[in-house]
Length: 217
Ligand code: E4P
Figure 1 (cartoon, rainbow, N blue to C red):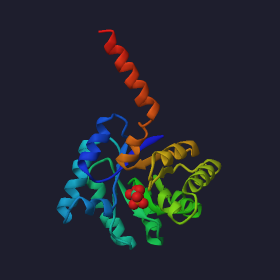
Figure 2: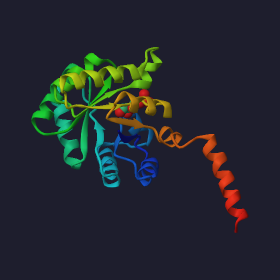
Figure 3: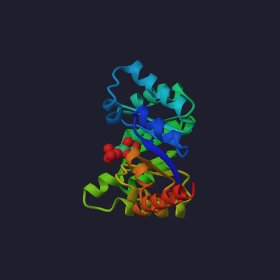
Figure 4: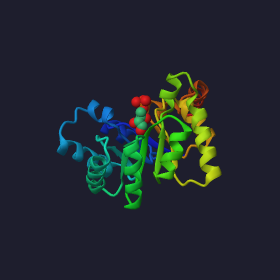
């Protein structure tokens, strides 16, 4: 399973990248706005900076909701860097645009996906990635990981090439369950990635080893 970081914060991207286990980055308008980025040029520059930091796919989301606008924006985003993936919402014009990008060799990430039916449409349109938001599904009192399992099983049965990118990850347990469910990628906040490191027995064991090592010096 690949690890993406779900942030537009450069310090966090650097910290995850320095671990050596980062495969890509996803952003969205909320995450970009959180960094105080304003205006077309600043937005484009920020994506370029991220692409120069991480050697892997970087999802950049369109702001438009109608076909022509999504295509125009997507073309400009894709021109920033070879690793840009155009992130398109799961709406009717979004599906049309994903098909257009597929036919024109531009990689896409279909976002705001909450059901297996939506994931089937994204795959039919040729999306490179599909992003089911598992934390937000949990918030609606359904099991987000179950939706991942269902999508993985449908894609395998049908031979769809779209990669399942589990998004809206809220905890290390989400990552473990998505890995078990066969997700191709998890896009996570830095805290969830670092959370995977934690175990009290590791801390206790290390304390003991360090003290025994010291006694031998
Ligand atoms: C997906 O690519 C989104 O950026 C993201 O995972 C949404 O997560 P949230 O529900 O924590 O906002």
